[in-house]
Image (cartoon, rainbow, N blue to C red; front, side, top):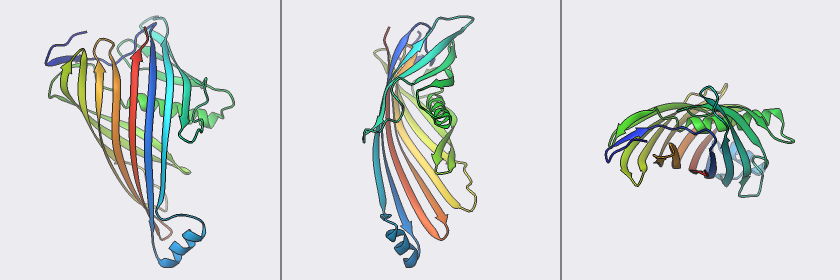
Length: 258
């Protein structure tokens, strides 16, 4: 690895025949405020819908990432989930679920399959898509960067929204703040641009976020990635206006085992 007090040779990658631990805690709070004429609001209330409707949840995830032997500049990679559940004790991903893929030297993994007992194919696809999106969120170029310099990335992301999907592009700016003790410290600013169009629905949406990233220079991985972002959505459906505010805090940690 190469770095000085002011220059960091940035390179995100996993290494053949190495093992890593991955942990994540995600806290979210969603608030929906309904508005409209009195009769419409009364009808909503008779259906047992609170106004505002507030929901909070915490998801905890622990897993291992294992890299195989290098062959022709490529090696197999596997994620094993030991725990993935909500604060209510609901299992998000069954224990023992494995996700497989491949990784090239100096690149991030590409996952292509999932194995899990008693999981329907559509659920498998959804989880696989989420994992792919999660790894793409920290897709930085291999380059030398100086303190004070910024790197900007654009990554697509889809979130299930009932029978539809909420499609967006996340524009992220990483700014290198300091280098010390074999670690590079970045500040993160995010701008979320929504691209979804839902038929028969008027929708306005916006989102912003911020966070921190700590880069492990020796092992070429991030040791900690923290984001805090807010999304605001405004829907008008059949005369009912719904204002949704979603706040999410996410902390992801990675460490090398050997």
